[in-house]
Amino acid sequence: MDITVTNSLQLRDVRETDLSLFFGHQLDREANYMAAFTAQDPTDRDAIFSRWKKVLTDPTVIFKTILLDDQIVGSVLSYEEEALPQVSYWIGKEHWGQGIATRALTEFLMQCNLARPIYARAVKDNHRSLRVLKKCGFIITGEHQDFAHPRGTEADEYTLILN
Image (cartoon, rainbow, N blue to C red; front, side, top):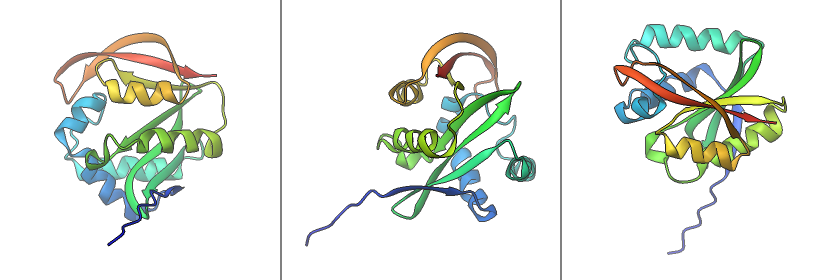
């Protein structure tokens, strides 16, 4: 029997019903460790949902659900921090290593947020995320250190820019 894999990737506006799946994604310990700078308590559903609901109503935020063959696999968003546009994404661990983050971020930067320069951050030892950002044209412009709750210690992070 022949099986056709289309790998159709789409970005759509986040719906409140997507948040439960996002919450499940971010509960993964390894994913939190790699993201490093996450919520102090990623298991606090009420706090996480409250924050996301504020994000959904913030006119400066562009928040998209990533669909692969009509299945939710993650999210990508842009927001402003100190009046500078930032981009971030999260892919469910079961979908890592498939090129989804690169495809989704590329699409997001071409269709959803054309602001340039736009910034991103990644912890220094998150080689996969750094590879995604570099494939999308970001370059490292600096580094800093901050407390990473999932690691229980300070962590080094790169700042990247796409012009």
